[in-house]
Amino acid sequence: MFFDGKLTLVSLEFILEEFKEHKSEIMEKSGLDENEYLALELKLNCPIWSEDKRLKKQTLVKIINTIELIRELG
Image (tube, rainbow, N blue to C red; front, side, top):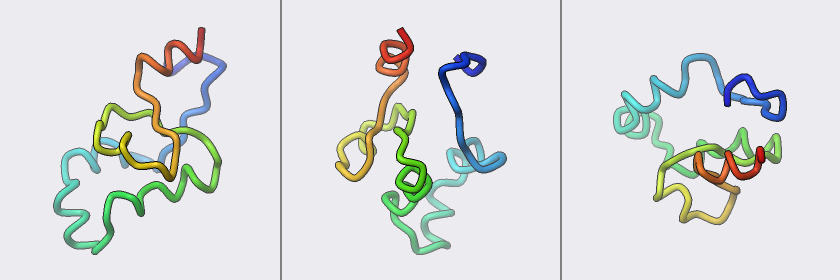
């Protein structure tokens, strides 16, 4: 899926793995909550690809999981 021409994947360099590994520490030190990490999606008006069930419950931005992404790509 990473090489599918229908997708444009957007992320800060190295952020995904670093965020997963240090999520609690980052949130504690930054004083930010999970919703404040949605700013990039809001700016670009694109969905976030995530398997995080808690993130999917929010209504600010569209969250799609892998199965939904595969369906979208046809």
